[in-house]
Amino acid sequence: MALDSETRKKIQLFLAAAILIAGARAAYIVYERHEERKEAAQPKQENALDPDYYVTPKKLHPYDLKSARDLTKQPVWIQVGYGNTYYPYNPARRHADFLHEAGTLGPLQKLQITDVVADNSPRTPGEKQVLALFSLDSKSYAVPIGVEKDGDYKIYSDQIFFIQDPHDLYKHWPAEVWNAIESHEVRPGMNELQADFAVGLGIPEGSGSDRTVKYSNGGNALVVTYRNGKVTQVKPAS
Image (cartoon, rainbow, N blue to C red; front, side):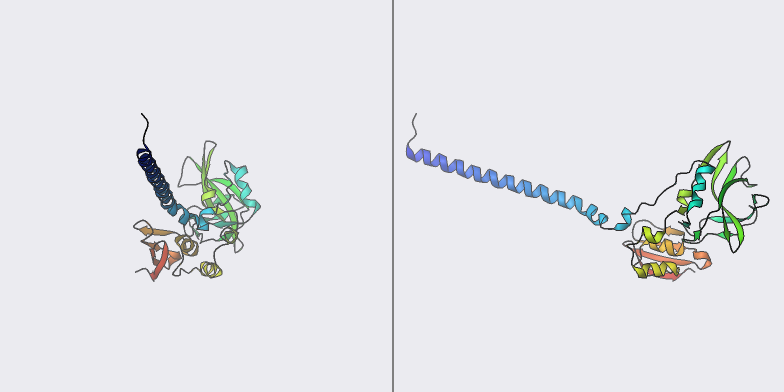
């Protein structure tokens, strides 16, 4: 059956309107999905802006004494200050005095490892301590960096030492931050890693980016408050 001109015009108008409505709906869906993707990606973009996330220190992955002696090929820096005890070492006897602690290694303390050896300790019968040897004020010392038992070595020097200068690893930090770190000071605006580099091992109270951390700081204890991951208050511990 043939359609008269008036009916054909109405159908054409209806189809045109339907096409416009469908096009508008499709455009809205595309826009809505774009906004959802942008919103979902926003936290990742914010995290990506922090250059600290891109710092990847080199690791040696030692598995025996020979591979651990690669520590002697360059200076090393302590990763966590006041977290590693060291002992007097007698080179003639090739033995460490484990019964008398000499001290704890400070934040980012620079050492030149002279050798890596295994030694018996009365505190760990049945296994030997793997020791990194170094000198301070012309005296010999040893710091444990692993254990050996029945020829099986577990060496965790990668968690104790940087084998690259931290100044180069974190060269994006401003000079005033490095000045505070080298003076062993925590200042407002520093982040927690920077504070750790300045005053060493801390014990947190709470979790997340808003919390309080207590630092022994080599006997000069501090309490540091963080808000959104930044230092807001520093005071002596009671």
